[in-house]
Image 1 (tube, one colour):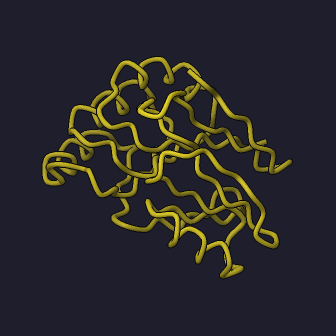
Image 2 (cartoon, rainbow, N blue to C red; image 1 turned 90 degrees about the horizontal axis):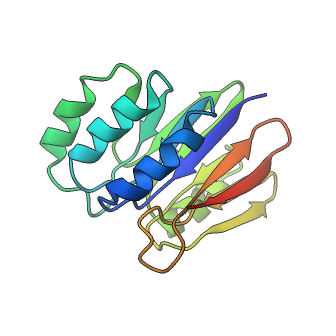
Length: 163
């Protein structure tokens, strides 16, 4: 039974990331929908997750993409995908990007079981035909709660984790 943790919009909040790590270590795959921001967040995720695969897309506030890319190469379990990630996890088709409008269009395409996005810092999940459209909320906590989501691939259920 595969579980996927989805987070977004960390914006350098290393303290909330450290709080999230024990929860993230209980899943099979971690997805980050962009806006890590500083390169040190890669190091924190790489070390904190051990060998758990981490897939990351760029957000509009990710500074120093060169150093983020260079640091990510130190961790074999981290994959940077650019603006869009298309993944197949245990036969479960997933698309990841940073922006809500692109996420909505991807969900409407009918090509994916799960589409993840961030950017607007607002937790959201809904069904678009057979596709689960998910914004995990913001890890940063700018608008109140720091949160992320865990998706159970088998049941397609979403569990919200608030820190």
